Amino acid sequence: MKRFKPRIKIGPTSVTILFFVLSLAVIPRLLPDNYWQSIFSITGVYVMLALGLNIVAGFTGLLDLSYIAFFGIGGYTFAFLCSDHFGIHLPFLLALPICALTAMVSGFLLGLTSIRLKGDYLAIVTLAFAQIFKLLLLNLDAPINITGGVNGIYAFDQVTLLFINIVTPENYSVLIWTCALLVFLVSFRLKASRIGRGWNAIREDELAANAIGINTTRMKLYSFATGAMIAGFSGAVFVSFQDSVFPNNFDFQQLVIVYCMVIIGGLGNIYGVIAGAVVLSILPEILREYGGLRMMIYGVALVSIMALRPQGLFSAIPGFTKLVKRPDKDETGELRASTDLYYSQDKDETDVKRYTKQAIPLLEIQNLTLNFGGLTAVDKLDFCLHKNEILSIIGPNGAGKSTLFNIISGIYQSDQGKVIYKDLDISAYKPHRVAKAGIARTFQNLRLFNELSVIDNIKISRFCRTKAFFFSAIFNLNLNKTEEKETHETAKKILKMFGRRLTGYRYDQKVSQLSYANRRRVEIARAMATGPEILLLDEPSAGMNPQETGEITEFIKELRDRFGYTILVIEHKLNLVKAVSDRVIVMDHGEKICEGSYDDVAKNPMVIEAYLGKKGKSGNQTNS
Ligand code: ADP
Ligand code: MG
Image (cartoon, rainbow, N blue to C red; front, side, top):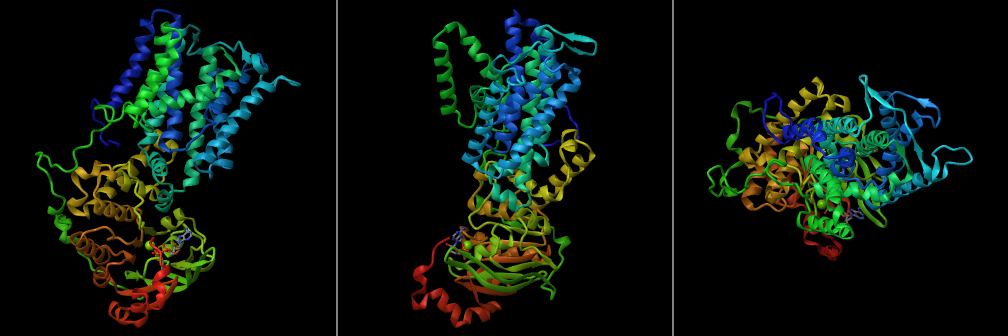
């Protein structure tokens, strides 16, 4: 989390920076010989590589198997630009960014073609890319010698920085670890920014991320390209150190090693990943004297780590990750019952404003139809939602209510009909554009970012209302600072609306530790944080006990009365519907069968029929 007032505090960040600086100043001098000097340098390269892969696989959750190819692209670009091979002799400091950029552009292009693929399919395409890359390296030595084939390319220009010739292993280790420090800072800053939060959201639940306003395709592409850039940068530094480059340097085996580093460090955990890289670089060397047993011990160590600490070797070790307080105890250690706190305790009565339904149409659904194969889930639906209205949609399971929400929020495309929001035809909008336009939703089956804290779940929603981009985030420019502050304050303000249910020690709790009712509340809070005008609530009281249902009923009323939201709510609990609704629409088999005030609707014979299932209709209703 970002701190706004710089305070000197010994935390994991300072420890890491201290570690780097120490590495630079002391370790090279302590190492016994050139052999250990070069192990130390290689460790630095692995730290960079692992941090880069951590962005793609750890932050964003993409199974990218082409990562090692970008390491190679950086390496070979360096060989082309700084050697006799083509007779180009660029200075090191110019060649380095070019190598990183070349890898980044390659990553971007590969990403463009494959990023829409998910999981295994992305893995297959990226693996194929890495294999093709390796084959090209091996075979592009004839008829024109480009890559040098199996023999690779060697004897690069001497590196001179600030009039110092970088020759000895000691010089190199300082250079490499300085680069590693840079990569650490970049990934640290990105992780703490809106970009990092967007990536995390994609890893946790891509659809939900899209629905709260994140252009997931684009953000995945950025993640892919950022990883490729860091790999390319590391590749250039590495081959310069090795003073040669061979196709073998970019084997699948290398990729597996880097993945192991990231996984045993804990996907997404920067400090863990650094430690993972250090341990896995040095361990094989320490084991070297055990000869044949070496790989066996190494293997057993890896398997044990994965079995005993699947979240990563260094997760939840004090100082490496923030310890989360026991959720069910208060500061004095007393058990805290969840029902002893009423949500509106902290209500600020001074800002009570009253909103009521107005005659202005805000959202118009026109002739909306969607078929799933032979099943018409939504059938020629027409209705209008007015400004500051609470409109409830009821109907038996399988009536098409959630499907309607999925169409409005852009997750499904309708076969016919339109969704008009404030004179804007949003029928063809993707989910992130719908969210940005001002319509936010919750999901019937809860789609929270479970491994993230309550406050982070809410902060992610500010993504579509903020702009800070890579440059601003990495250098923490003013735009980033103000937006981070605004994001944090808005998130807190929204959580406060739920009273003590979601404040205080709850902020830092993982969402997966919350009670079911609280998770429902977080989902509503997350929708509110996107800054919408319309809230689509899909069964907000599902799974809540009567007391919690009473609270949420009051809360939904307040959302309109005090905060002026316009609300479309799907509900089964008729007490809630009765208490909140200006109007009620009843759906059955995708059609609107009736519309009006709660009392009118409740008396309608068609509604009674739909609910009680006369004519044997209930037989084909499915649970969803
Ligand atoms: P509910 O009114 O209970 O929210 P839904 O909108 O979830 O109902 O579902 C309406 C109908 O559409 C159901 O018969 C359901 O099985 C079907 N359905 C929903 N989503 C899909 C899908 N992605 N593919 C096929 N059928 C679906
Ligand atoms: Mg539903």
